[in-house]
Image (tube, rainbow, N blue to C red):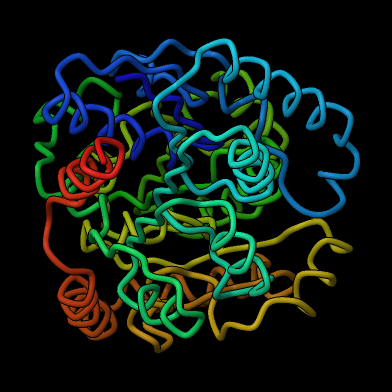
Length: 372
C-alpha cells in the first residue's frame, strides 16, 4: 500500500522512521512519500519536504512566515492528490497537520494521526476538529486516552515510541575519543532543533561553562544545523576550552552525561529515559509567550513533569531562564542527594509510560484500519 506521512520536526522524523520500519513488517510492499528528515528518508521514504523548511516556532514567527506556510499547504495538497495514497499518516505538528487533515477528509482520503497534538494543554476545542476529520488517533501519553474519552472520542494508546529507541540503544564505546573529549565528567547541552530556539537558549547555557571548569560541556547539534551555526554562537560567548560540539550523537552524549540543560520538548523525556538529571529551559519570543501563557492550561511545560504530575525536574521559563538561576539549579542537580531523588522519579516515569513496542503496535493497528 501507499502511505503519505507528514512530520514537521526532528522528533517526528525519529518516530516516523521507526513507524515506517514497523509498517514494512506489516506490509512488505509499503511505499512512502514523506515530509520529514534524514531518518525517514533513510527508512525508505521519498522525501518531498524536509522539516528544516517547516519549523516555525511561536505565534509571531508563524505570522511572519504565513506566506511560506500557505505555499507549503498548497504544494502538499497537490502532491497528495498526485500520489493517491491509501492513507495519510500525520505525526504531531498540529498547526499544519490539522489543516491537511480537514482537506484530506474532504477528498475521501483515510486520515490516521500518530502522536496527538497537545490539545490537552491548550486549544482544547481542537478535539472536535479531530473527531470530524481524523479516522483514528494513536496516542503515546498515558493520560491522553482519558482526555479524549471525556469528549466521547475513542483513541488507541500505543505507548511511547521513545521507550523502544532508548531500550534498544547501544552507546558507541569510542564516543569520547572520536570527538576529542577528555575523561572529565560531561554536562550535555540540548538547546533544541529549531534555529530560533537554539539562538535563544544556547547563549545562556554556554555561560555555565566557565563557572564549572571541572566539567566539559558538550553541545548536542541538531542534524539540520551546520557546525558553523554553533561556532558563531559560541564565538559570541568567547567559547571556553571546556565546550565541545557533537552532531547526530545525542544519545551517545546522554549515555555519558552527568547532567543536562535541555530546551523544553521531546528532549526532556529522552534525557529522563537515559537517567540524566536535567534542568528544563524555555524562552520564547516575548509576545508569543504572553499569548501562550493566557491560553495554556497545564501546570508544567516538560513532558517529564506532566506525566508524573509533579515538579520532578526544575523548569526555568522565560525570565527565570537566566545565567544566575541556571547556575543555581545546575549546582543542585550535581549534588548526590538531589540526583538520587530525580532518578527515583525517573523510575516512576518509566512505569507510567507503559511497555516498549509502540511503533509495532501503532503500525499493526494502522494496517488493520487501512485494510478494513
